[in-house]
Length: 110
Length: 114
Image 1 (cartoon, helix red, strand yellow):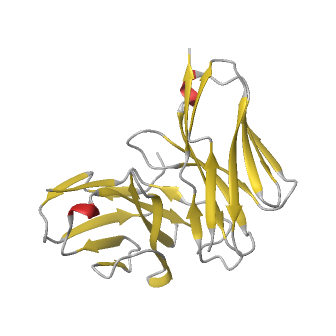
Image 2 (cartoon, chains in turn brown, purple; image 1 turned 60 degrees about the vertical axis):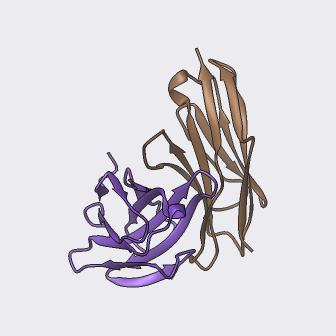
């Protein structure tokens, strides 16, 4: 069964304190690994898509990386506005099953 | 603003009732997806339509159904509602089917069953 897990469940950081979020996936082949950000009361907002192991993508203070079994979202020198729930999702190789992880709630304190 | 519009934003109804949720995709997007998000189950894929035809099915109950119309807007119908159906229902759209293109989400409809 396709499955996506994320850790930690919640993370509190001081402003400027860098850290990483983990996404582990088990799918029938991987067509794409997606990262989203979700603010309270809003729909998920697309951040990145990664397609193959070794790939990296960056956007402002965020960098996503991918291995054969997991993906990491690195947050460098976070700011309070980075506080949100970060979701990852895996799309299987048949393009039929899109499975979200439970998310990591990130709080960045000023 | 993702460009995906969902109505209504909030819906309060009683057990046993039927409701319809509406979604207008981003301009040019052919695929529409429906998701349910609850506190205990996270974001669950329900169903996908591509250019009017059902493309993929996830954990959608038999009491739920959806359709995509010629103008590409979509409706999710929920019937014989139960307390456990209370959740946020999201619609997303993308240019094609479950391809590598990212999905863009609306802000959801919050459904409360009393």
